[in-house]
Length: 361
Image (tube, rainbow, N blue to C red; front, side, top):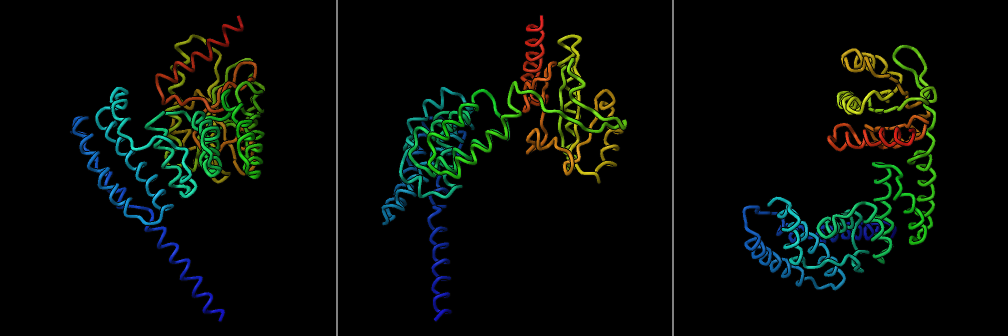
């Protein structure tokens, strides 16, 4: 009897998987996969109407009302993606997007069918909604999801996922300080609320204008570096990964920062690079420093991630990272813009130096 039950359960699980595969609607998605950027906007609109008509036939043929609602939501997402890709293909001009927006079959993300989507589908649906309709920042997306969409699934998966990614990429800035309270007000899931509280506590110690946490690491000359020994200087830090194939290339990018500092004048700036690895990487680290001549004017530090508290203290989740510390030991940014992003880096770098000097005077 038990074997019969097991067979029935197994068949049910397989059937569920088969049904899920059938309800991914690849046949609808395929209708919108090709984008002809050579078409005029009027010509594209006519082609889009034909695509919409074919997709409508497929969706209308679905008997189950709930599943038809889910298919409709995905259909409209695939259509939005096609519109966006065509817009990019013809140059990505705002005026053209304004002409194309009325072609969308729907623009309201607050629909009950969102609860039926898988996490991957949910992300796809909302990413394309925001990209085509609002081009919103992560902060604005989180705010709309929390205040404007009733789905708890959206709040739990999409909005909280945005929060985690935004913190990893940019840390806690002025806007992000208030978003934690919004999460606590809007989310019912206590587990997510607890996780939000943990993230707030984790990142507040490395937020803008916080006191920079002490960094104690060995340099390539056998000395011990302490951040607090440089209170009278700006300290600009590049953190890179020794176990990454191209990790050492970040030193070339970092060297570009010196040019921006030079344009400002004779600023007291220390350029510090921190290689993150394990004790087994020490020889590799020394070889890289010997090959990279620009490291001769940098302070070169080694962080053993299995022993040092630096990675935890500065919430190092992904590399490379740039850290900017003011003369008085205040953390201007634990997620400063990379020198690779010129000329924005130069503007931000000099702005920070000039702002401090102006206040000092």
